[in-house]
Length: 119
Image (cartoon, rainbow, N blue to C red; front, side, top):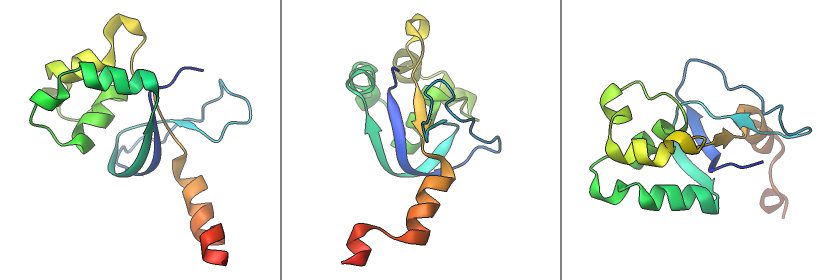
C-alpha cells in the first residue's frame, strides 16, 4: 500500500470524521482529514520527495497549513491554489496519501501508559 504521510500525533481540525483504512485488513490507520498542531509525523520516501520537489521552501506558509492541504481539502482556497501545494499533491500521479492513527490509538497510550512510564 503506497502512502506519503502518517500523522503520529496531531489534532483533528476537520469536522468530518476520519474513515478507517479498510484497504489494509487489520490496520489501525485512518484516511487523514485536516489536522493541525502536528507534533509527530512520518514521511515515506515518496512523500519526502514530493515535498522536496514542490518548492515549499520558496513559499511563506506554515507547515501545519501545508501538510493537510496535500491530502485533504484545506478550508482556505488560496492555500489549495499555491503552486507548491498543487505540485506536491501530484495531480495525475495519484495524489498525496495522508493517513493517521486516529484518536483511539493515542488515547489508549495515554490511558495505559508506555514502557517508559512503567520503568
